[in-house]
Image (cartoon, rainbow, N blue to C red; front, side):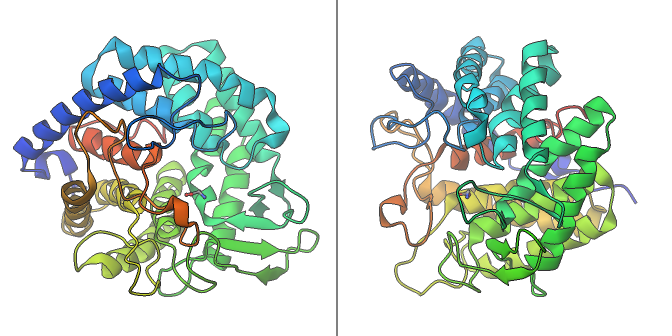
Amino acid sequence: MPNFDIVSSFQDQAWLADKKEKLDRKMRYAVEKARQTPWIPYTTDGKNWKENRIGWWTNGFWPANMWQMYRMTGAEIYREEALRAETMLDEALRDFKNLSHDVGFMWLIQSGVRYALEKNQESYDRTLFAAETLAGRYNSNGFIRAWNGQGREGWAIVDCMMNLPLLYWATEETGDPRFRQIAMKHADTTIAHFVRPDGSCNHIVIFDAETGEFLDNPGGQGYESGSSWSRGQSWALYGFVLSYLHTGAQRYLDTAKRVANYFISQIADDWMPRCDFRQPAEPNLKDNVAGNVAACGLLELARALPELEGKFYFDAAIRILKAQEADAADWKLEDPAIFQKCTSAWHDEPGRHITMTYGDYYFIEAINKLSGDPLLFWYPNK
Ligand code: GLY
């Protein structure tokens, strides 16, 4: 039986055309606003991009937004802005000791993509350097260290599943299996210690850095220990699909389905993920990033499965995209960002229902997927 085809199955071409037109208008405005600042965009104050430091982990998403828009429109303005941000990010690359596990988000989806499209040596070098940095964070007890700082030597987080494609890329480019081996060890540890039997996930797991013994699972950006931070669930969902696509290992596909089934079961009322699926009823905090990441993961999951099974995940992805867009997308040319209900962390009050470039990123990625784009950004050498 053939795999599910997300492009021919998407019937609502008017919706798609409308979103592309709105995205091009809004993103041109966002670029104009970005060029008035010396920093890489992350979040807004309702009118302008706010100041942002160069080492901030989301900074690859802005140039990745530009490459997605370039794929969508072919407009040179987006490519130019991507290159401007890529060059700015060299300052963060030089300061490598302050980088975290998030180097995949920072370089694969922009320098890695540029290299795939243009074969320029500088972008290749940046991406491989980032991969070496990520591999260097591996603890031989089977996990990649997440953050820096004394006392955090044994901390791993579920978000790292989305940085593993950088390691798969490095093996595919260089032929050296070490990168893929590290990625698979980390993915296996994530199955063993993060993903619970019901498909929900821990955000953080703290291991003894010397012995690898499990020590604790604090709530992290979610509500509390044992709760279910929706963005963490979406990182696991998409991350396991990507590990399956890069390795062909069935256990990663099975885990992606387990997390996806749980995710869908938590949002089937209105298709808009709360910040934490186990948060109190009030405040009713949403997280548009979780929804858009999950939608991209569900679309790739659908593409990896036979028709009937794929359709189930495809339908869920479309419902999420449409529900969140109707509820929280701002297409006016005032705020340069689109999605207005992104939440940084449940306990971070100023970070509730704000804008984030990566919330917008995954919506654009989903629109390009529905228009026929291959999985370029997390798989640039495919
Ligand atoms: N910890 C990365 C995130 O906010 O998703």
